[in-house]
Image (tube, rainbow, N blue to C red; front, side, top):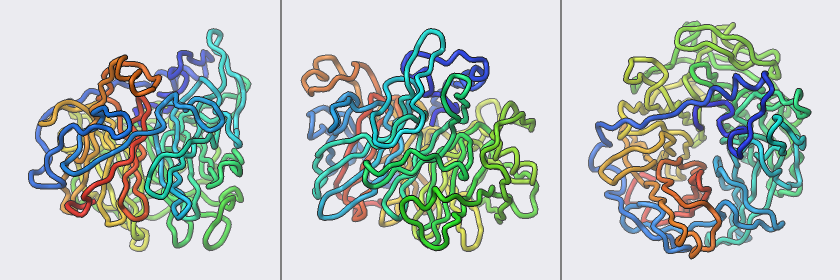
Length: 494
C-alpha cells in the first residue's frame, strides 16, 4: 500500500523495533502528496456522485452515484465472536464463500506491533521489544459472515502472528492468500523471518499459519490464481525494484486447500529480447512478450541493488531474477483474474513533477498467459484521472474498479480518496469517494470506538464483488470500516 515495506510495521501502534537491522526498513517511509489537474473523461460511469447516508449508522460516510445504497459493518473496535476487538487497518479482502448459508469474506489487517489476533492459526507469537515498547505482532486476517441478502452477522479471527498483511487474493477453491508486505527478519528480536504468503482456509478453524516459503520472501502485495491450472501470479511492492512473479505448484492439476503448502517453483517475468526491461514509465498500448526465469532460492535474504532510479536493498528473489535479465515495475500492487486474463496495478508508473521515473500516478496492465503478452491498458497522467490506484477488482460483467491510495485529491466533488473505474477504451471515471469526517458525538451515537477526525485522505482497499455482481464489498483502511454497496449496476460498466 503506502510506499514502505513496513510502513504499518511497528509505527502503527506506537513502538518501533530499535535493532539496527530493522532501521533501514523503517526509514523507507515516504509521504505522498496529491496533485491536482486534468480529470476523468466526461460521460463515463454512473454519473455524478453525492453524499449518501449509511443505512447502519445514518452518517454520510461515502459519496456515490444516484440510486446506490450501502451499509457499514465490522468497524475497528467492534467485538468479534470471540470477544476480541476487531483489529484496525482494514486492507485486502475478497468474497471466498457464497451460497444458501450466506456470504463469507476474509479481510487483511495491515498492522505491525500491537495486540496479537487470537486466531486458530498463528505464525509468529513472539513478544518483540525495541527497548521501549514490548508487544506481539498484530497483523493477520479476520473472517466476516453475512446472510444471503448481505446483512451483517459476525466476524471471527482467522490468522494471527503476521505483520503488514497488505493485499492478497482469493483462490478458486474457496480460501484466501494473505501477503506480508515486508521482508523483515525478526529472529534477532526473538521472532521469525517475515515476508511470506499464508493460506487462510474457508473454515477459520482449519487455518494452519504455515508460511508458503516457496512463493518467495519479499514485500508481497497481491496474488491472483489461474483457475485452469492453479498457477499463482504475484506482485511485489518495493520502489523501482519490483518483480512480477508466478508460482507453479508441485501438485498437478487443480489445487485444493493445503495443496500450496506442498511447495512449487517460483519464477520472475522477463521481457523477451529486452534484458532488464524497465516499466517505470508506460503509455497505453505498450506491449511486452513475456518469458519466465526460475528463482533458485525463493527464501533468500535481501541484498544491495544498484540501478538507475533504483538502489538500496532489494529482495532476494528480485535480485536473482534481475541477474537473469528479468523486468522491473515501479511498485506492483493489486492483481485480479477475470476470464483467463490478469489485471495488474503499478501504483507509481510514470514521471513525477521533477521528471523522475517510477514516481507517477499509476497504470493498469493486462497479462494474457495464453499469448504471454503484457499490455498497458490504462495510464494515469494526473491525479484527478487516477491518484495512485492500488487494489483492483473486476466485476462478474468485466468492469474494472481500482482503489486509490494517493492521500486524497481535490476534484469536482471535494477532497478525498476514491474508487475509480477504468473504461474499456483506457479512460477513467469516479464511482465513489471517501466522505468520512467524524465527531465524537457521531461516533458515540453510532456505538463505535474509533477516534474522531477527518479520514477522507485514507485509502479504499479490498474491493470485491459477490459472484452475482449485486454487492460490492470494500474497506476504508482508517478508521477501519467495511462496506456493502448495491444499486443499479447495469447502468454502467461494473
